[in-house]
Length: 242
Image (cartoon, rainbow, N blue to C red; front, side):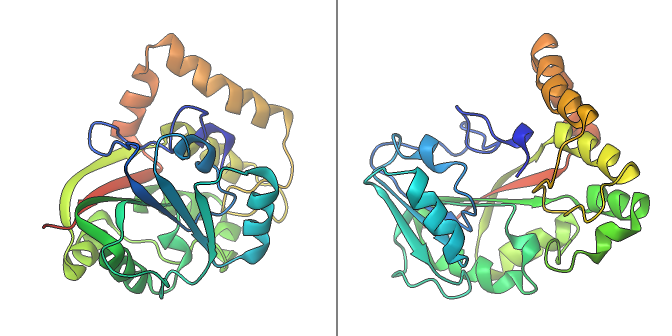
């Protein structure tokens, strides 16, 4: 997760006009990782279940975040130990690309979502991943990172297959998309494709700080225009028809 992708007042790049959160919602953060969205979600929701298969990450979250309405679960997303139709909102951001069999996870997300609930799934775009691989052959060698990269229609077919109805798709993360172009032209040894940086260079910091400034200076136009041309992520808004 890059610094540009985390804002204190935002949950990833979730479009609040499609998926808002209220005080009665029971929310699932599927594949929470370092839990970057939990502090923002906690005051908005009734309760949040944060699931990850890495117990070490969950212990780290518990040492940093103490909200009583956050429940941490160490579990495989292919078999979530929660009854069906439990959650009002499900978010699964930049997770499915790390799985060899994303259909199993998608099926579970559908199962545990309430009828008429909303599920937000974010994945890297096929175009951005293809470009990074061409710019930096070692980008493809990270078999533990981005494993499943599909075209938009292929993702949509998987969602439809398990029963999801599509509410909308948004292009997001133009700033990080530009940054990863630079990072793959001028790679750092053992540079992970996941966005977990081993170190920063001066230009890294200038880029990370400069993109938000450019966006504010153009009243959001920098990212809006860029997301039309070269987004790094697709955000799929899905529902389970009641």
